[in-house]
Length: 147
View 1 (cartoon, helix red, strand yellow):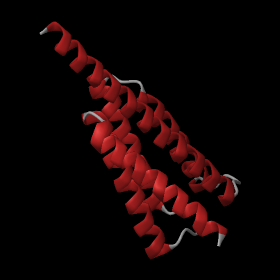
View 2: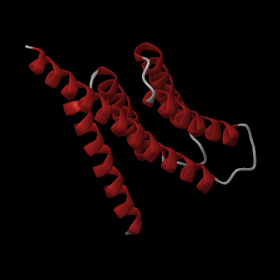
View 3: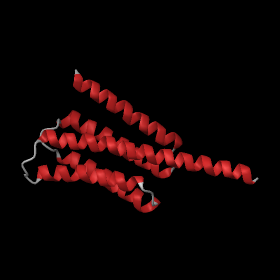
View 4: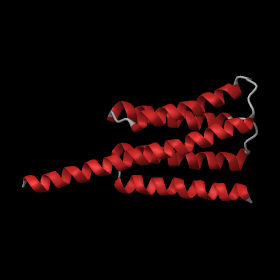
């Protein structure tokens, strides 16, 4: 029962972040939120089909794809939030690699790392979206004063 409550709160938080990013963000924020939503849905499908025994390689590939997406956003748009998001996503990928290489790591600790970094990445996207929104508002206000 309590597991479902956490899943619902996480889903509401994720969808709220995506809506905020798609409505108020610029291209980098929309791309980051879209990549993160795609990874979330893909991991749900993977969990439904395979379950999560150990660390599936599919989950590693999904998380590596999101890491590449954040690196591309950081490189192309020169903003700070994708750098933080990519760093957090790298922690997730490295923790999965530790498990795959046979290190003695509890699966519960892997899921804890993944969940904590996921929420922090969502916060990074929200902060980036907020600043992009405020910069756009300030630019439009300055244009109105100069006319």
